[in-house]
Image (cartoon, rainbow, N blue to C red; front, side, top):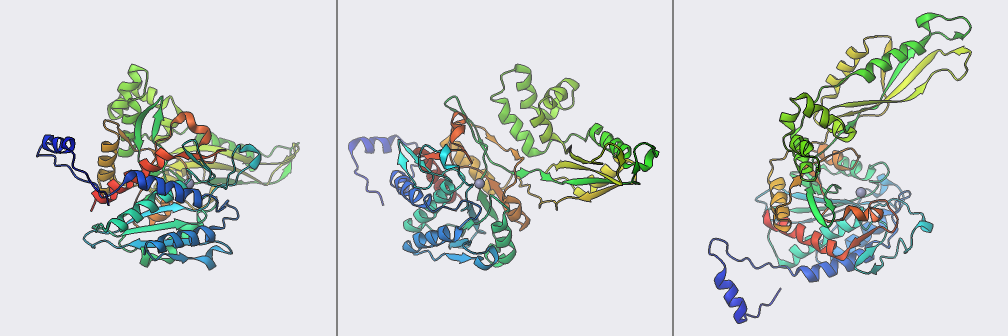
Length: 470
Ligand SMILES: [Zn+2]
């Protein structure tokens, strides 16, 4: 609760506010919440959840305790399924039920540290010079605490939201993603009707003291790792046996695959991402192409420019990189079998079966067999025209006036597809503004740290978002 002393200056300010935009007093004291969140983070970081082994039962118990103090009963889940010392955590703040729930999700595990490379303790929660230091400060305990603080602040303010807010903390994101996979599989009841989900993403760009864009991850390319297998006849290299030697046949298949120019396709998310890139592009022609990639792709010069950078090329099509090759291990032995592994990455909305059919047509040799190396992860591809997306846009616009929203399609793997598979519209974002020059302190780096300002920014971001969507 904040008390307002109505000084003359304030009255004047109130009189000057145009009627069309009435002043709204916030029920939140953002400075106090920031400081409290920093304190919580400096208690959360010392609980060592390096994965392996994870040890997330300790963080889950801590989260349960913190929420219990606020009158929110959390649940420690999946301990048997995840193994000794491990757990998922779940809590829910009820809304009035007018709209479907929204889930705030983070992972409790962190990547291991090499102590000798840290100049501060990695597991102490040290607060120094305006920063909270420790493994997980950014990835992603800091984010988890920001979500927690927002939940607590809403509860304390007695704010009745239209949606339940579901709070989930998972184990094992950094290794196999088993926490989210098991949670989704075992608790359809807890996820029932959940419409939206927010978790990590990593693509807001702050450079040269300026925010260039605010990123909302809306999809991931899907790895479709495939092995080409050619069976032949083993014999001595001194007597060639033509195509019964599997090696030249495999080599021809690799060549066809490598020469294949897969079709170009501009998804709405990538189009929007390119438009944000246009704002930082230095060459005038590049700016023109990025600002209107749909038109650029129709001209030869525009297409060539867009494809000239491998990262952009990879966002515009399905890609194939031949990587592991296995034939004989002796110069004079023709092997019985030769194999090549392909790192295939599909655009988020691609149909894998249709793609494989096309790949077989390109290889054009039925003696080349295609084997699955690993099952393809679930599709994760969120729409851009939802209430949540618009609400994020609105809040980002208020906190960062004039800054574009970018919608990158991320090349990395995360827990997001596991939740998307459950039918939940999932977005990834980081509620921080971290300058690119600070990359050394970034995700998985040494001396990982999050500034106190960023903690405050994140809490405010979530509170404006959740209270604005009510
Ligand atoms: Zn992470």
